Image 1 (cartoon, one colour):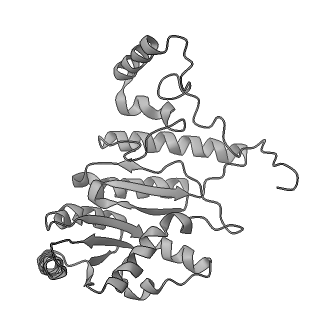
Image 2: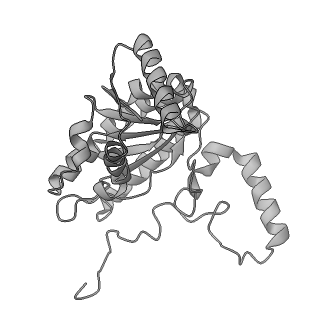
Image 3: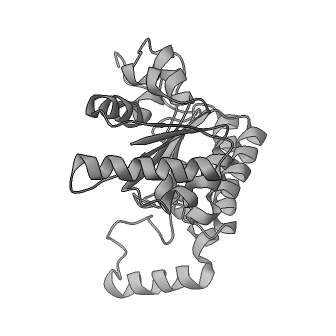
Length: 265
């Protein structure tokens, strides 16, 4: 395993294609905010002390028929990457216990994104994907968009596939907060589409992002989807409100300005 620290999202994205050229079987990334959140939850994973410097950590795992072969490939990649990069802190790990300790941090990303009683974060803008060659530029523009809206997020994902997950501190309990959330989702969809990417690169669009699909597919292809559905579902009974003629993205929110939890819950 190689663990590489970069100063920001964009630089990590820039180097993802270079790392892929060395032949890893996995290339994952997580933001330092994952560690900050774990600390705020009074959790101190042992792998923390193994991490390199840098805001964004990339984890590159190498395989082989034997442990020795995998280790040799990792060290060959380390040497090659060090010759080509002057902005990264790189470390190699062969001990299975060290590797597992690092994977635990990567796997904690989703759970670490929410801090009960301290900060609510929500799914919605997860799963966006762009070509790996465009990932660095996309992440820089994505950071600018986040800064403009003054949101906080936890970022992690599959850098080897250009698929990035984020959980945001959206305010979904007030009318201004929901209106801001809606604008962000629209602007984010425009950004991903401008890079030729996908709004949902791994798990599918579902109800939430269906309203935004015209930005990605365009009206002609969406009309083709509508025509196809009309043939097989003329009464519009199968899974309505998804993909074509969708529910608004801020409709049917689990929370919202009129949210009234059950007494005692």
